[in-house]
Length: 198
Image 1 (cartoon, helix red, strand yellow):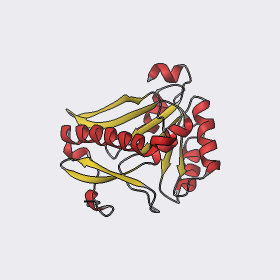
Image 2 (cartoon, rainbow, N blue to C red; image 1 turned 60 degrees about the vertical axis):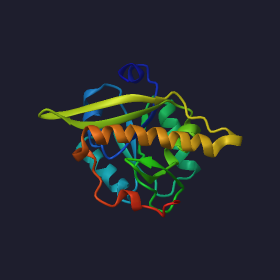
Image 3 (cartoon, one colour; image 1 turned 135 degrees about the vertical axis):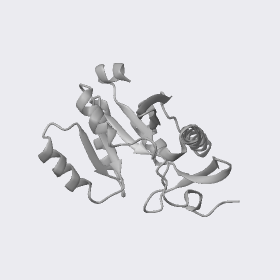
């Protein structure tokens, strides 16, 4: 990942509530050239960005509110990735306004996962990485892994391709949660976010 940053090759970072996005600010301060746009489901993103700018005018972390993501937002994100930046999005919460989800096995039960990250990754045509932050000893270990070099959603088999991405992410999240269960910030009935299809 450090080589990608040095070469100004951007990408999408797919994380979950085991991938403490607040660490992105620390990474941005310690890794030269690391710029990240974090997609959030809050109407307060603009106010928070203004606060970050007052505290650190050179801050390399930006929050973008994505409750309603349209073409303008997608173009903005594409520009950021093309300029060597990274876009971070969580893949373990269903959309606030009822966006599309797919259910897949997760820790022994079927659970809904959003598809937005994969649709965005396909539109951006960039590499996708996972990020996790788990307790290790007296501290934390942050890991980045390549999830895929590119998400492709063929017209004739788009739903199957999306289901494959969702399943891969659920398996990745299972591995993180089973390694360190108390690091998953899940404070609601995860499996009941949407009606089950079985």
